Length: 225
Image 1 (cartoon, rainbow, N blue to C red):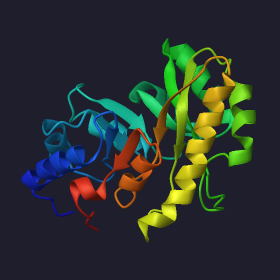
Image 2 (image 1 turned 90 degrees about the horizontal axis):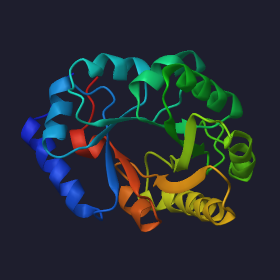
Image 3 (image 1 turned 120 degrees about the horizontal axis):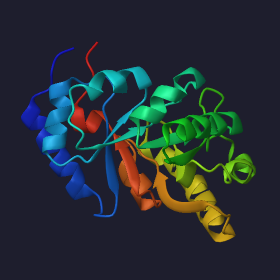
Image 4 (image 1 turned 90 degrees about the vertical axis):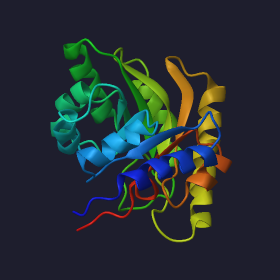
């Protein structure tokens, strides 16, 4: 894969940071990126990097000093839970009781409490993971007493391509659920983070209430083949 100019990455980090409110956390979605590219982003002020795959995050750990937080932002396979618990500081993609229980079990073994977000399939798309909107409350109430995970918010994807405005209804659904869960005052559940929006849609996501955005292409440039 051809490396993107490192100064371009640094300039992109600055530009994106300036385009979002100060309270919004920018997660650098680093899938397929080279170590020097990720380091350039960190040098420009990135505090959190996100990975879709456990194996790739594990490989990158050897190249990155322990100066950033690591978020799991892709679908977590059950056979990767043990490694994920050791690698990540937050798992944004909890979407089932079984997965939550497995994460909790591994966290108990590791002596760790894992902040998690509930992933919502806000568009009810058959090709995407995530709990359906109507099942969010049920899922939270089944896992909120697991001692070694902390439910801290919600996450949704939205369309990756196309007119960014097409993502707005997805984000409105997630924000509405976020507010409803917060109002419900479910024990051991804190709605701190609403993670939504990527390179093509993050500005709309912020307009609709996101305080975490996950940006890859706009930050690092297009991925090579």
